[in-house]
Image 1 (cartoon, rainbow, N blue to C red):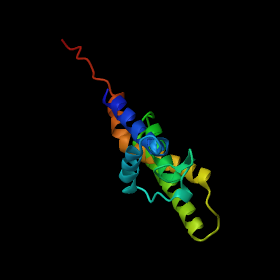
Image 2 (image 1 turned 30 degrees about the vertical axis):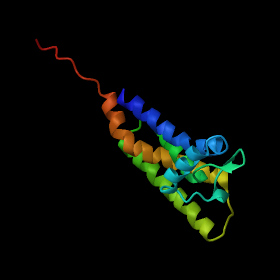
Image 3 (image 1 turned 135 degrees about the vertical axis):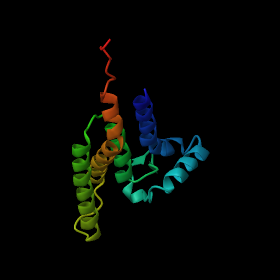
Image 4 (image 1 turned 60 degrees about the vertical axis):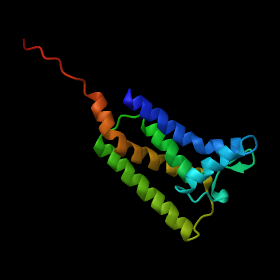
Amino acid sequence: MLKLKLSLAIFVLALSPLAAPLLAVSHPLFAVLIRSFFSRLCHQDPVRSFMVEGSPVAVCVRCLGIYCGAALASLLRMGKVPARRLLAMALLLNLLDVATATLHWHGNLPLPRFLLGVLLGVGAGAVLLSPLSLAGSRSPQKDHSG
């Protein structure tokens, strides 16, 4: 039950940046509050964000991918070793993307950046949530001795 509640909370967090542009016209205060919350976690560069109804999402494409990946990871059962390997690979790929963009080897690539973020989110989420996965897979043993 705890894992289900945690998964639901992660999905709400992952999707809440999409609410800011959807609420911008009808409920601007809520949109500002969402953007303000995520401003502490993301640079929110509109050029590096998906646009919804003409307004940028409250986080950049990589951060949105990370949140969505963490939400996906909450549904997976992955051991510690594979989770750590996935996280290491995802970190390396994201660092390579940042380095090549800094060197101007490529321009703004939203879809690859989003997908790299998803990979990073799945890896990080799997590492952070692997103790819950392992605890949930262990069922209490019945004592048949007597």
